Length: 507
Image (cartoon, rainbow, N blue to C red; front, side):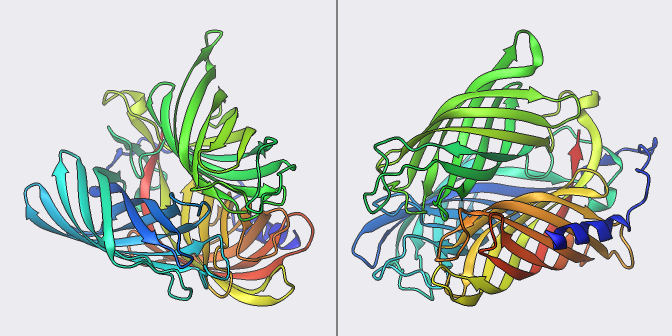
């Protein structure tokens, strides 16, 4: 705790004592570029070393670097057989060749990290995963489908598929953004900017497994499980939304559990008060790990939700409902609290105030984190390196929100994963675009034999960031990673990240 407080206090000394004035009547900043982008999912069957068969499902977001190349983050998880809980997080690079007006050929390479469900017959090694693919796609409007050949392999373990068929479905879209140099200026856009989500949220709550729930050894689950996570949401119309959520176990002896779900929902004004709303939501996705028996990993979720839109911008939610593993021995009612921060919103007619806002910088990129003294459950200490997706968003010129999600990629902690969210402070640009800052993140982690107590962890970091180009940022940081309950884990962290910066509207 001493490091976190010291780092934030030191940075605060660099910040002005007064807030910036409201932007003047300078001309509106306009969307500078609209790059092609795509959301893409695929399905890959494979035979595991222990003789079982599974299939990996994925979802990736890719943005065009130019007319031929694209790059973006993605997640893979087991969705068939009895391997629920195998997850990896990483990045896909893709090259496309136009063959005809409605047909293209794509060559992809996914580099990720993770694993799960390790046994003597099933080893993920350090956690690094590679998946090359060559596929032929047919386009119908904004949608496309494809079939190809691919292979999944964990080079430092024994998990490796043969070369087999894979199936792809995707949707093309745009990625409109402002220049990061427009930060702080009033801007105007007639469409959502950046990733296209309206809210980012931090979630925390509990599940109480039912009497029929079991772990993978057949032992009844009797302790409630605390979870921490995050959510991205887009509103289709007022009160109607879809989104993506991810969470991990942070309490209850299920460290290593992870889930990723898509959800849809609707709520309505309560007692005629537009800011207080009640409704319901449905979710489906993948989950497992932490010894919980989720079977193939397919999860279904449903329940009511109560939302309060505060007058200051953020919204507060209380969600409840039921989680059900369709092919495993796990089901549980849940309750959770949610704090959501606005990112953007669906604009109305051009010229309305809702089309205007202030440009804020958002960053999306890749991080490598090296932890030199990780404590394992068997008492040994070893160095472990992580691969992670990083995302940050300015709320003011000096305060930003940050998120990290990743897994072990080198060392002996394959199947270890983590997710962290929090806040940071940053200085004005100093010399040559250099910024310094500090952040404090909290979240959940576990798996791979790493000692993390119940799974609740925290990480603090002081950092420096260099401007490589108009939109590229290189960051290095030094900090500390530790468990939040007790002192079972504490290790320095060295962080190197490369991110793509872009301007989005805070409406």
